[in-house]
Image 1 (cartoon, rainbow, N blue to C red):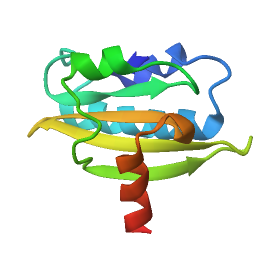
Image 2 (cartoon, rainbow, N blue to C red):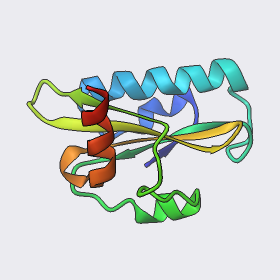
Image 3 (spheres, rainbow, N blue to C red):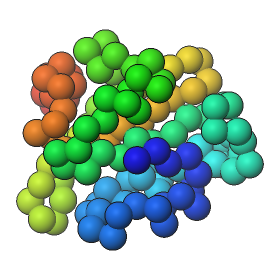
Image 4 (cartoon, helix red, strand yellow):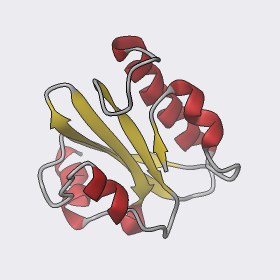
Length: 120
């Protein structure tokens, strides 16, 4: 699911864990504050891709020409109150466009998991 603006938070599935909703809202708020809430979706700033557990996300990656095996700019783990672990990863597409991806740890490529383990 692609989210571009803070107002898009309402598009998340109702069963999205609150911890993920907060992280997504924070990220979208920063994009809106720094790049404008009226920016074109392919313009400055970026977006968030939320991938519910077990869902395919190849199409979204291809849309932004993201190679998840490439170096990730930043990655961290998010624990949910349901005991699930999700990964937040930022890919810098250009100097002024970043794509944040939130996906379940089980669906996350190994290089991103290794990046988090290296930082800890």
